Length: 242
Ligand code: FES
Ligand code: FES
Image 1 (cartoon, rainbow, N blue to C red):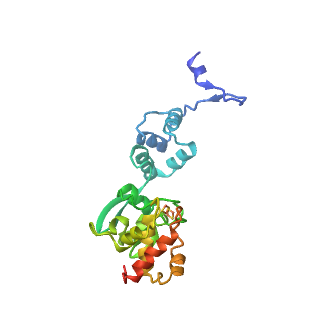
Image 2: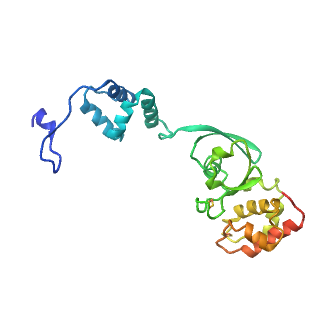
Image 3: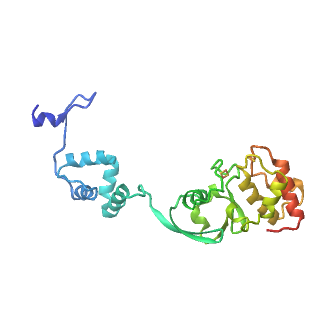
């Protein structure tokens, strides 16, 4: 088979000949090839490199049409460890300690706590704002960290379950949960504790009915609800505020 024959292929089901395009590259196409660290002088070379890099023709057209800044973004993304995701510096103050992080702006507070700061006490249940397992305090108020962007919590005091006790001294809510058997498997417990603390601070723990209402966003698959209510009532009655 001659070189020419090798350079000509038949597309399955296409009744005509497809020939590789040997026309020279445009300036933008040549620049994109250079950014990708590849060599070549023809559109055929260009298409081969795109296929190897997993870039569609339409994306390439977009890139070559958008000038060098777009190329830089994509070339950096392909070669960088961030996998094409732009990150921003975010400062999070968690349990009294400030952390400087570089985060994708879409990262939830829950993922930042668990994946970046290794604070895995805060649990991921549904990741959709429906179970309360991820409850933490931000600026003194309870929030669902799975529905809160990490960047939204910048500059706020964040308290997680790891920050509830003072050294070896359990928080009164933790002690009350133990006393009243407020948990079984314990998966929902960090969220229940954080929510219980906030519930008292909000003044929503005066009666069992109030507690049931205002703790209704925290689900417990083990059904420890009566014991959780009893624990929160005890802490509220003790006069503890926050
Ligand atoms: Fe956030 Fe379920 S994990 S509400
Ligand atoms: Fe098991 Fe609540 S203690 S889910």
